[in-house]
Length: 171
Image 1 (tube, rainbow, N blue to C red):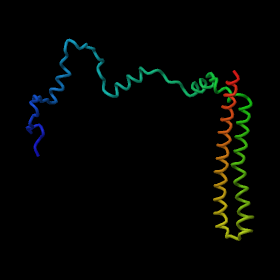
Image 2 (image 1 turned 90 degrees about the vertical axis):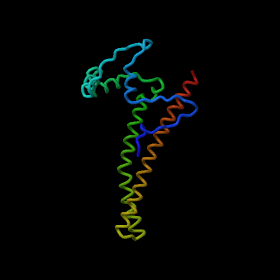
Image 3 (image 1 turned 45 degrees about the horizontal axis):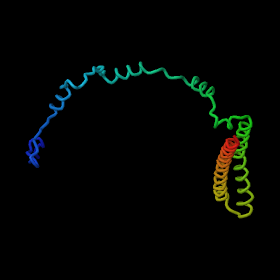
Image 4 (image 1 turned 60 degrees about the vertical axis):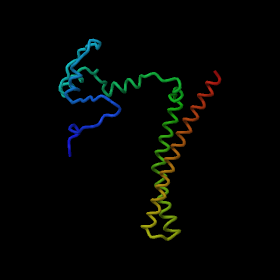
């Protein structure tokens, strides 16, 4: 196979032949015309040295405690004020405790009830099958509890937004 630089190509429509090599591209960078403004650039350091220099010029970052303190002292946006009242805080904590308790107790009660009273006593299934079906039902119950929590949280936020819109209409 021949090298493409050695091949001759025909020119179309009387176009001029201009050839360039990698040397000519480098030469373009070296040649500066009078119309171009000559701007002296800072010499580039090797990668490691440049990164060390960049790190030295960067502003020091805040530590975790300072970030938390800044977040706690940040002003509250007017459209978010309804979420930071004592009433909404109490409701959020109550919902957290209630749904946490449900996630622990309801699956245990469902498992025991279905295993002993339904699958073994009523349907007379072997213990392995009864445990399998009880486990499947408990997984469904856990998903339903999580979905209920999502719905309650969505509904609470939607109510707060509606309340804010009603207050803005009154003004």
